[in-house]
Amino acid sequence: MARLITLNNHTYSQVLFSVFTLVEYSLFTTAIYLALKKKLFKRIVLFGVPLFLAAYILSFIFIVKDTADSISITVEYSLVIVSALLYFFEEINQPNTTFIYSSFQFWAIVGILIYSTGTFFLFMYSQALSYEEWSKWEVINYVFTWIKNICFSVAACLPKKSNNLSAEDKMYDDPFYNRTL
Image (tube, rainbow, N blue to C red; front, side, top):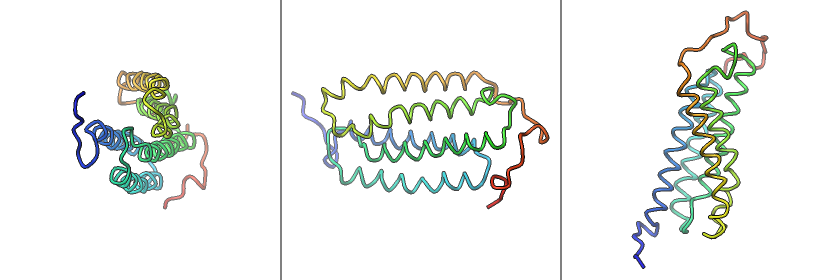
């Protein structure tokens, strides 16, 4: 049997999973941050970055196991879900396009949200699963990865410019939403 190469009590696959989690969070958060318009919502997304980094570093240092780092993935998906919901809240209150699904940002964030919510509990409990149990449940990850990739493909096919609404076509003025903080 091949000897496992380790790095500070972590196998290379664990290091790769951890790096993937960091890159995935960075890309998802950046996409959502760029889609947001309100400064308050952007600040909320930025507030989550140190929380994720703390969970990421602590789970990498203190948890040594042969599975994925479920703590940092759970924190990642929680923050990504909240950020995606902020985008949809913003779109509901101040729509910018005639049809929300005609925006490439919508499809990208739908893909992020579906993947994050669909695999949330799978990765939360991944450390408790044996290899045999994981092989039974990994189809969930594959299905939601396909859905995410399909949504990303739709987003890539849409034009960057969308049919924007004029100010008078927007639904209504919400005093709570329109406050500047």
